[in-house]
Length: 157
Image (cartoon, rainbow, N blue to C red; front, top):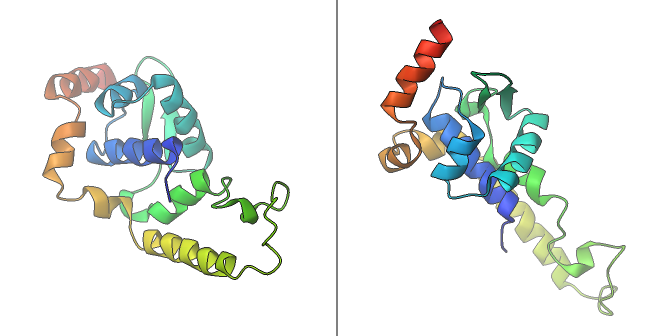
């Protein structure tokens, strides 16, 4: 199984927001910290916002932040948003399935259960589990102190 780039970016964006809890981050900052294309990142930001994981703010001091506490964001829910539209195998998509074994193949049932077990495991992992006490991640994704001061000055002005 291979995760899509969008799922990978979604996890990175959410972790950056969780590490910088209480701050509004700019998409360009996250893209740079996560070594990601800004264009691809913005597409993922739109989907995360549409599904209620983050909130976006427009304007001079705009950006994005978590829409709810990290402990309330299940990684299984996040993965389903981005992976649900991609069939795991050809036989899982009735419109494009050309496999001649589909009618009698037993493997599909086992694979379907394995995929569901994968999501079940991720349902038990929250964004907080990934970020709480993860000093290495915090060092990589934290907004620099100088930027925090500038953002605080803008907010109080």
